[in-house]
Amino acid sequence: MLAAYSLRTLHLHLLRQTVATLLVTVAVFTFILLLGNVLKDVLDLLASGRATPSIVMRAILLLIPFAVAFALPIGMLTASLLVFGRLSADGEITAIRSGGISLVAAAAPVVGLSVLLSGVCGWFNGYVAPASRVAFKQLQQEAIRAKGFAGFASGRYLDFGSLTLYAREASGTNLSEVLVYQVVGGRRMLDLWAPEANFSLDSNGWPNHLTLRNAQGLAQLNPIYAAEWSTNLTLLRPDALVTPKPSEMTFPQLRTELERRRGAGEPVTPILVQLHRQVAFSFACVGFTMVGIPLGLRAHRRETNIGLAIALALLFAYYAFIILGQALETREAAWPHLILWIPNFLFQGVGAWMLYRADQGPR
Image 1 (cartoon, rainbow, N blue to C red):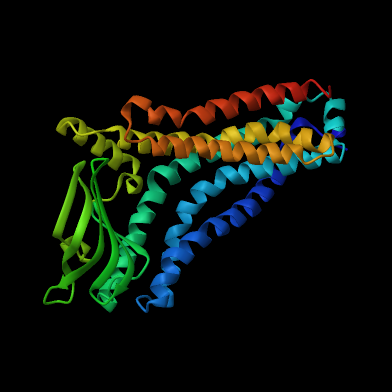
Image 2 (cartoon, rainbow, N blue to C red):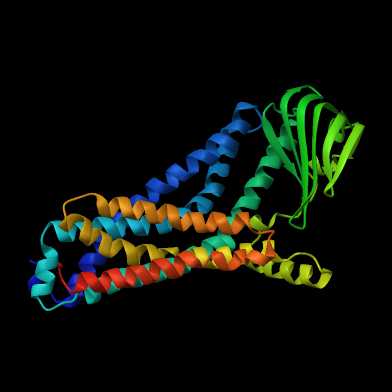
């Protein structure tokens, strides 16, 4: 029984249990998060004949850091729930209290582990994941360069520079039901739709101009209708250097871009949102752990699944704040970069209160 254990032995026991569970859950969630990207991007390259199996494996490896950054906080929540749930179910919590050890003291190393993992998440969010995402896109372009331009695919979005193109149907150089929109400095400058379009190729077989017929929509927020509208597509060349999006920038790059936009008088809120997202989301490990420990104790003591259900609801609530902040990134008056911090304060505050209540014993 844990009643006879020293505090140090108890801490080592909890850390071993937590780390073992964390490794398994992070691996599972990383695999799940990877599936979407693999099916969407990597397998498209392989199916189109633009990539070899070795390139596909490199692409998957480059996507792993992005998935790990999200899987670590979820893994800490799951590990906290399972480890402390087992302690409660096996009666070891009673043994801990009988030995004169409080739940706060017993949980201290697990909370410390979450702080350490927050630093790891910060490194992934601010450096590794954005750099890996850019490297992944470069790998995609290398595969395209090796096989040559194969034409636009039906029902796919193509993102090049600030311009995005979508065609419901594509046959050679002819497109139908085409959507073109452009975002510059966080503002949607162009939003056009056309029933048909086509693009021309240069001497090297690469697209250089897109022409829309009977285009209608908005250009710089002004209504527009044009029997024929064309734009330059040279940025689609795989050898073109395109500035990464804010979501693909590392923390130092975001700081540099923030200063540049301030000096140029451009909107800075989208950059602030990305900066604060990278830092704020890194603390999710602490908040999830603070909530997961008392929920694990309570769920098994009552012999219901209510604790796990609440944890899942809180998980969705946390990410809802992240999504809300990013959705409002063009609305400076809404202070979207501060919205990203709300779930951290909420989870850590509520978790600390719940842990204190659990330490007082069953009510």
